[in-house]
Length: 200
Image (cartoon, rainbow, N blue to C red):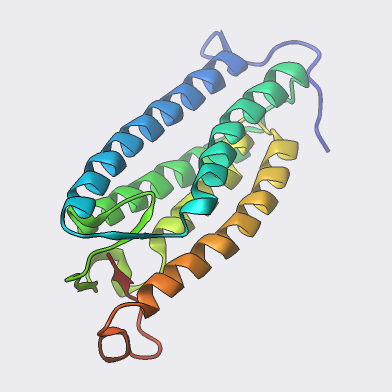
């Protein structure tokens, strides 16, 4: 249940909604940086004969992630839910951890990282970094971010709606990635059962 505040909650003398808006803007800027990296890497991959899989769902993914930021701001400013200090702190820590995990993935994959699913003809199966522990670590980061960003200011409606929508999208997205993995000539040899790998 969302508890409505009779007066604006302040953090360090500033309306908490203003602080939250600043956090959302920073996340949006981080998304822009990611898209620029992804576009640069896509050009690099296509120039080397990369093949894209599942391009049809990509606009939906971009729209969902963009809408999350808008919906969180609308709920916070319109319904004015009272933030819960413990939840805010935990959510901020989880958000920072998710971003750290994403940039660990980006650093591990280098030029091969992308927001699209692109497979190079002479690609190697990536076994280092977070792929030693998880098959799709980037999607764990995305799942955490979608869930916790709205919870920084107790925007429970946005958190629930977009977590469910993101789960449905990830079912499609992970299926696309698995198809891309299976298209790799050395998949059976390089990806034994039970091991976590990513091919790009």
